[in-house]
Image 1: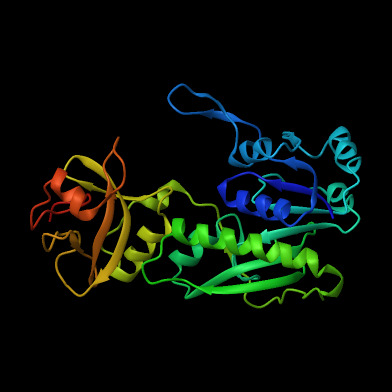
Image 2: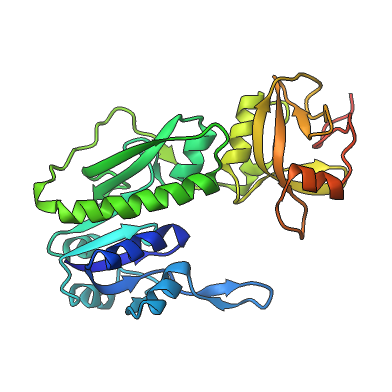
Length: 307
């Protein structure tokens, strides 16, 4: 098929590779424009742009698809279908209608659960035991379109958003190739009204750990926000990112270090930190982290008022 591909971050790259590998003709690749990054604040192309250029594909990055010119340029590509995955711009109706077979979205949840911007983070933070990928026909509503294919996967007890992100990206790449191969035989499944939840964009204000919360919630927060933006706490005067954890069988005053393995008491139970990061340094497993920063038994983490 003649395909317009629309995606921007790392999550989208395996999908582009899969479409090319399956022999589909990529009419053009749409992604977000380069933005300043790094210490020099030089414009850096998105992961999709970098990969598309390496493959010799035409890349477009309009700042809006709402203009007549942008919509004419899109329609002029004469695509059979558009494949959209983590693109970052709203597609107006004229764009949705332009490809002969419409637009398909690869969404990282089992719709209608976790419509919206951050389905992977929210699934882990909510304690979901499974998630998956849906191939959805796009319409004007937010992730409301009929589902053509879905595939579920369990969420591991210590899995982070980073690890689940990579697994779901590969799943999406395989599932979209199946969907295009079987497009004429697939029956769209209207999403039910029951079970709708929304995965709001992650606010950095959510990232500060409240040790007074139950351990199961603290663990989900740490894993759900890893690697970005990263849950954090204060250890002394330093702000430390916590990037991996597991629930531990221990009790103590909330926020207190209980052993030499960085087990921290919560409001109910405790968590053991398995991966952490100091400002200006790389992420480290807890053993390496503790060799570089002493955190004695009894240390109180976070900011608590005096009693």
